Image (cartoon, rainbow, N blue to C red; front, side, top):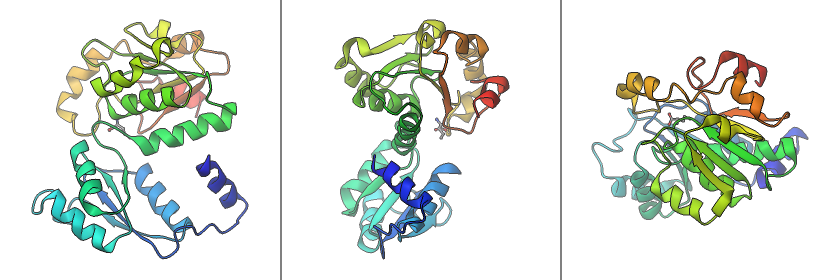
Length: 260
Ligand code: NVA
């Protein structure tokens, strides 16, 4: 809701420099287009100075421990955004830096993307309450885990359809059991997509899993969003993808372009 407020101020050209004179470190172990752009533009809009640090720009992760880097960055910056591999790294930054830390994606979670997605769903439908979100594809990746937990916590019904062995992280499933029949997990993408308001997917091979790409292409073959899947969803269903998309793999070009 606060992001919607900020978006509205921006649209109306009303200055909203809530973070004037703050400095924010943007630390990236993995590549990024949207998250880097979003943090940079948002920091500037809010009056803060963002400083981008790519993997080859710092000693982070190979020459210096997470705790040491965290203390140094925290002594100079007012906040740190981190995108990388291990969840333990972002938690280490939060533990040792003494400043707010944003998770800009790890292998396990992608909360900033998820919050932006819920913001979009709310803009389109006016509410999240009782809307059905179906996630089709790699059920164990950062997006699936985040949408599952976030969707249930914001009052949505969530269905995940994924092959055996790719079910969401046990931590995410532990949250899901609190929500009883608001959560379903199935191998049947048509059952999962039935009457869905939002059909969501993500790549079959996430960053860091490139050596498994061939194997994954075969395993996820039956977990594509195509027009047959859309035919069982609600008439006004939204299609969402955190991007980058691989047309012809997790989603057909036809469906992606029709909903772009
Ligand atoms: N699951 C994808 C999300 C990219 C925004 C990845 O981690 O590569």
